[in-house]
Length: 182
Length: 181
Image (cartoon, rainbow over all chains, first blue to last red; front, side, top):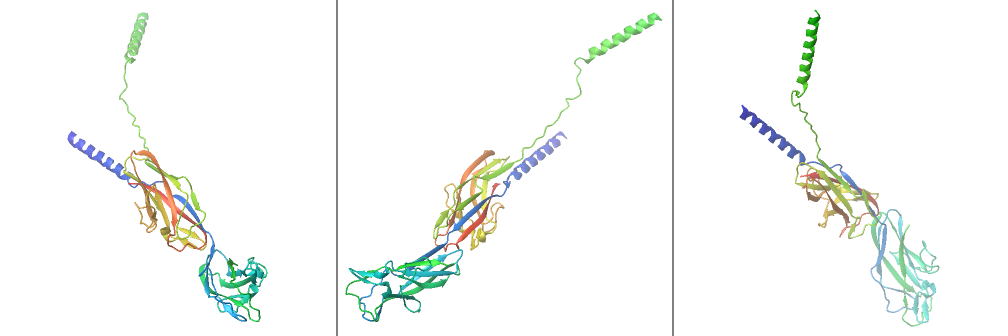
């Protein structure tokens, strides 16, 4: 009888131990504890051109002489906006291209995107960009979707139709291009 | 008659003296016992050094790190081999959400210590987390059974070779829980 009683006690003790050990595994912490993550993707608008320079071998007299066509690509990631506008300008309209003491005015430089009509760089500041008398809005593209990209051709030419040819020389100038969201 | 009263008085005094003498050294029944029972419940508490962490600007085409934070586990157990830290996002497809879209948990990486970063794309661990949005972040020995441990928790967004998310402010909640194994 005494032996049987001891056995019962032993079995009971083992059962309690097993129960305690089992209860610990799987014990969960408070919570879940949370960490709030905040991240901002800043708006971006990037402009690139397919070439850094273009060259015409010879300016034609009394004609429009084109530069080789190149591409302009705008890439944007915005939170708002309806239109991406491309503005081009020469810093000094009277001397868009320079060869020593000789200049080619921005009025003689014409440009277009797509198949629009060529227009001279003689406009006023556009969307806060450019300089008076040396600017042109070249392109306008829908900003939707707000994370997008678009490419267009940019054709430039020198227009000496009905004008005396510039003095002989090698002329160099810099066209500034910038895109803006509106 | 008077003599009889005297005898009765003497008898009473003798009885009283005998009774008083019998009280000294008398023990109660027993000992009576009182069993005291008290339980210190097992505990496992998790805390973080910050309730939120912020990236000012997500880098395009690469990784961007959140400021590191610390996670502390404090436990008081009767048994157990390891404390495992599990982290998860409730909705893997939109771990962080913003006006322009979502950032999936696959783009969120985490690590503790100096381990390699891993995305929150795993299945539930030890019953914690959700399928496709979970990572086991840390495992520490549970011994001694009444102890505490702290580790860094580094989180990052990985847009390596990926199109960046749409511009905007994104917010999400990482759930953390420790479990005894």
